[in-house]
Image 1 (cartoon, helix red, strand yellow):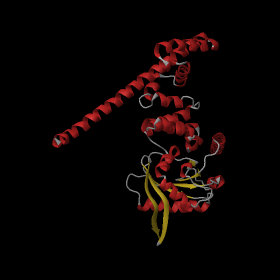
Image 2 (cartoon, one colour):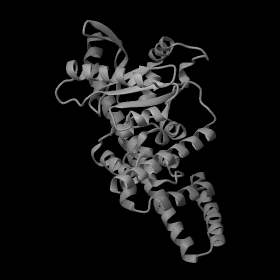
Image 3 (cartoon, rainbow, N blue to C red):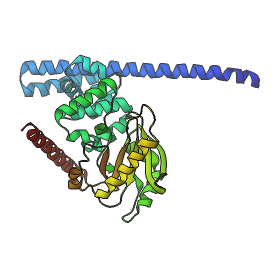
Image 4 (spheres, rainbow, N blue to C red):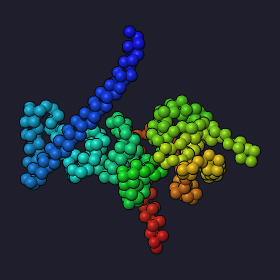
Length: 349
């Protein structure tokens, strides 16, 4: 009897896989069909409301239509959901775009991104979600954590953002500006008010999975306190990672104080050593990320680090009030874009 069971185990596993794949395919098809239906409903209602050119009539028609549809088809067509469908059709005008979206994003994903008013910010989240295959929960967390504002791309000229997102959408090609963030949220480490760099490093290793989630899904951990020898002197790299899509090693140095000019020299030394001894054919030059408690913006500008392979970012072990943080991010984006515009004027001057 046991021999028969053993013979049937591979068959059972194969059939189980076929069933699961079929279920996933059916679920994806159902989601696509329903989402396209919602878009068509939203588009049709919009057309009816616009034809009348009366806002009050629009409210009345949605309320009346919802009551009839709920009786016939259930609460999926409540007034609130109808308004979501209308907004969906308003945000995404073209059917071709919708067809492309629903291949990879569910209706629940789209509900999270529809309220975003800035089209470039919306496209950023959509393309990153498609690339990293975020669950709905992760998608919402990324939006709520203001990931777009924390990436360098948000501070670039509009055309640069458009070009980078086009490459991401068409070729799955990431740029460092889309990968690295400032600040990093490390509230999951549970650090108290007083801690050392060693405490910070140990907490990160203990929460490595959460740390990689905050860094981005393409980061792979390689080593901690990697020893390198230069002129008979030993140095130790805090954390070493590899980024699959950027195809390069990433050095992370942890500083509990503010960023200092000497940190740049230290990081350059590590990067040049890795470039000489660790890079393999097909890889790009390594990138350094200095995580510090305070960025010291003027130092970063004078050392011209914004366009180098060394990234400087703050980390927060406790999350501040999100409204204050949002205001700060928007101010920093405006300041950065104004400086870029002034620099372009001088260059063209």
